Image (cartoon, rainbow, N blue to C red):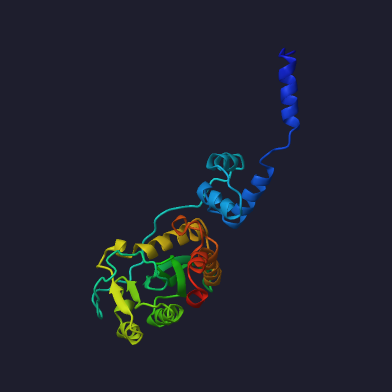
Length: 280
């Protein structure tokens, strides 16, 4: 079958087919970024390119990501929230933060909570069992950086006190009186927990009972952590899950950029805005 069309049309498309793809370098950069940051959408890709010195229109990035089939596919779902609330078993303190999460001073407002993960392991008889792991992080509300954390097989006061001691040490250069915020979980009502804060002249603050919005910064972190690293994956040992959490927290602190931080990572933002004497 013969198709009749003008010679000019034929010559035009012949030249187009021979042309080098103008997006070759950009595609390679986008692939490199997505290899490092599997959950970056076009907004973060655009910001990361800008951080590397490439100013690119968002529509061009969207088109290329569609061509390369780079849509974000992380599995997202809600799971039962771990609750450490057991009633009033110690001292409950006022909500000093009162959802005033923003601060311009590093290490001034610190928040904490506990979250639960599941993994699967065979018992000595070869039967598959569901086991649990618990994460106790302390977050700086200034830049949402995780300043300390502990991972354990069961919630206990010892590891929470260890994480607290690390957080107090990490934030000791704050020039103002610090406030450590939490929910009303049993561990935060312990006499030892409150005494440790008072010893360092730190205010203690607690959310209202059953109100997760009073501690939304750490809740948002748990959501990101589980969406980007946990949901959709199956972990077959405590060690395997523990290592992935450690790896993610380092990535979150040092590499994962945030729009509210002018497209910097938490550590980069802190180091960019404050002197070495405070951020070291």
